[in-house]
Amino acid sequence: MTNGLLNGKIALVTGASRGIGAAAARLFAREGATVVLAARTGADLELLTEEIGGDASYAVADFGDVADIRRVVDTVVERHGRLDVAFNNAGVNVPPHPVVDFPEDDFDLVTRVNHKGVFYAVAAEVKAMLATAGAGAIVNTSSVGSLIGNPALPAYGAAKRAVNSVTESAAVTYGPVGVRVNAIAPGLTLTAMVEDWERADPGVVERLTAGIPLGRAASPEEVAETAAWLLSDRASYVNGVVLPVTGGAGV
Image 1 (cartoon, rainbow, N blue to C red):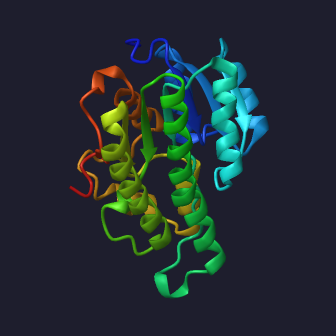
Image 2 (cartoon, rainbow, N blue to C red):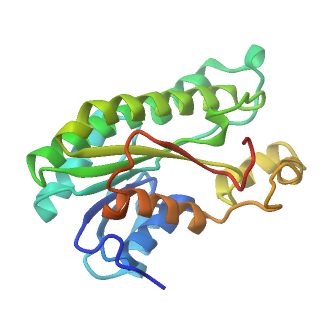
């Protein structure tokens, strides 16, 4: 069942080729948005765009590259005349390492995509929204790992905590001129990234699930629903929030 949460919106979804991003692209389209999907993998984006149908389209981009980020936002405006809402979901993770053994190349990759990429995506999106639609809404994907100690994924947790700060700073800066900025902090969600973590650390999903009051992991679709609401006009007085989507874990 859909409610028309995003009727008439022009929406950008990054990291849209799989997991939460793919679920969000499907959901936003069902809720009435015209979606532009963006990620690094063109073949996956093409298949998903065909599945969604309608006016959906895609753009291939590396969200650790500032020029690519700006190009994708410009592409949305060129295709549709404006940008109304954006879901910055692109992100990467690396195998678990404690702080003292963390490879520098892994640290640089996680920081470049998960922190720098979100920072400059927000910057480009705010500019486009104010120049075209005159207002808008942005949701960034953070993580429960940004809210608690994260011994296995310290660089990931640190980058996502930086996303929280970017979200809050942008919210107080651009809320007064019509652009709301919020974040979601998903807990354990059944995505390919979590499958990779389980392969690297067998049993981690079971251990994490044991600490979730709802007794299970989230589906990507459940997390996407939260992003859709925050981007919609029904959340018109919500700004600067980092909303945990964790089934009660970490509370």
